[in-house]
Image 1 (tube, rainbow, N blue to C red):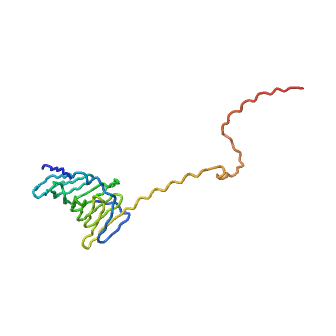
Image 2 (image 1 turned 60 degrees about the vertical axis):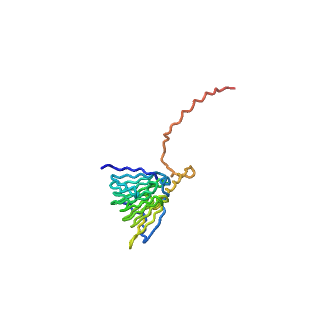
Image 3 (image 1 turned 135 degrees about the horizontal axis):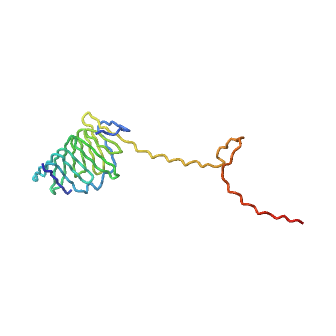
Length: 221
């Protein structure tokens, strides 16, 4: 089948070091998200697409991908909505699972997955629902029935669902390696005295030969 390509203007997890189980809701601010992403055009790709221009809806199936700068979303199926300026305003991706990722301003990577990923362009939010996981590499990982990620600020809000919990795992900051101590200076005064030895020693060092002294003439008076 032909692949549709639209260009629009605009898990195995690491062993935890610290684990927190929090009932209800949590909010956690990660590093600042890539600020230039919101200024980039949105690109939509899929194997198949059906566009309803009257309603401003596009239905995408198989290998659905949405990219904006460093932000990437993918899933098996997607439904997108367009505003009056023909710009993508909202998209919902589903998969087993669907995925998202984005680079932070500090160069680190945030990536996540869930049964459903709901992206609202106007308020810079991605809502992950159903076995949701978001990992900020080197910082922590977040699990819950519903996780809301802000693509502008990097804020993550988690909800455990009815009778459930949200699970947050934070990685401790790496401590700086201790500075190496300078080598202690040695001197003749500080060096330990060697025990006296009665055995004769041999001097094997080489010395320059002494220059011959001129003969002195003796005089008689």
